[in-house]
Length: 101
Image (tube, rainbow, N blue to C red; front, side):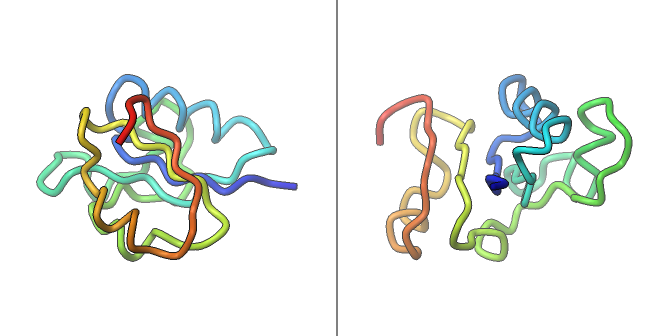
């Protein structure tokens, strides 16, 4: 079974590393790469950003469009998650966060 991942903070040190590892492991499907509005990587291919070949997944700031069932959201933005209200009000999803919220 493939685990679908959404990575918020995908262009930071930890998020980019997780994206890179996920793109190289067939156990995972990178379903979305999320960054804050205005980030210079918005629209760029996350594969290229992490030093791999293009994967067809553009970095986006539109989490509402990417937040879907059967995904694990890995949240590496700041101590208070960027999308806490959206996460709590959406269909049940799994969230992995480096700090409690």
